Length: 131
Image 1 (spheres, rainbow, N blue to C red):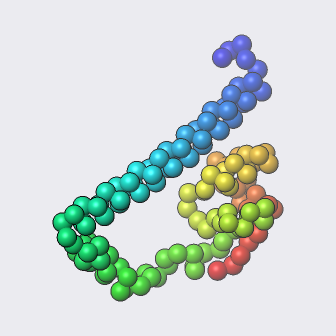
Image 2: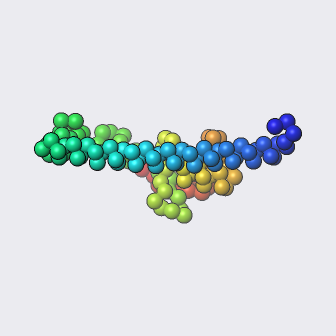
Image 3: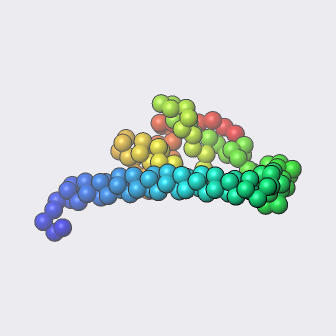
């Protein structure tokens, strides 16, 4: 590394970040697939044992959550939303930044790790929707 220029090292850092984002996307996709397969397996077990899915969901507490409704602060109702003008399906509300936002920031020369740059990017490149 000592023979590399700062620009070469920066390029390697960017490449590693992109690989990390790709791995994280692959991990989340795999996790989603595994959860879906697990749910299908549970449905099959429930049916094989002669139960109804609703009965089991009630035992798991699913009905209680539905009856209570939304808890205060749940969802996007209390927070500013940022929408990608290039793709309205891409919405950022708060918390961990979605991959589309990280990639869009990096593609426009912003550092997703820098809070000031994140805020600047949201104000300049996203559509703000007040809650």
